[in-house]
Length: 139
Image (cartoon, rainbow, N blue to C red):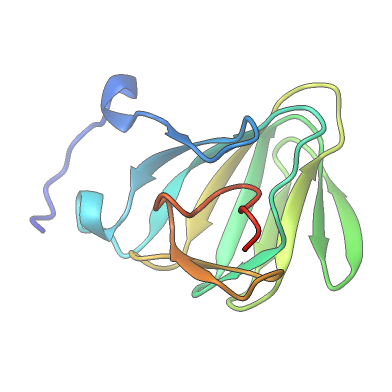
């Protein structure tokens, strides 16, 4: 992929429906920009969570709006606007919207190609593939 400076407008970015009301917008990745990082936002509606999972790379999450809890190592940690969670590669984690407004999270993955391994099933899926759901279907 040619690494050319560019601007992606809102329409070009689009949105990926991850089920359960969770939406993800991909900014850049290896496939999209030739980047060796993957960035975008995920929105979690009130009361929603994503399933426990891990990634093939380090991750940083910046909360842009709302109040969440980051879950890892069996504990939940409050996180609010302009606060950052760092999750090392392979660390099982998830985020829960515990506030009264939609949570908007900026994600930064330290890889151009990202995978997600669901803790419940052990299944590994490509980031934002059709199987990359907020709450994967059993079986």
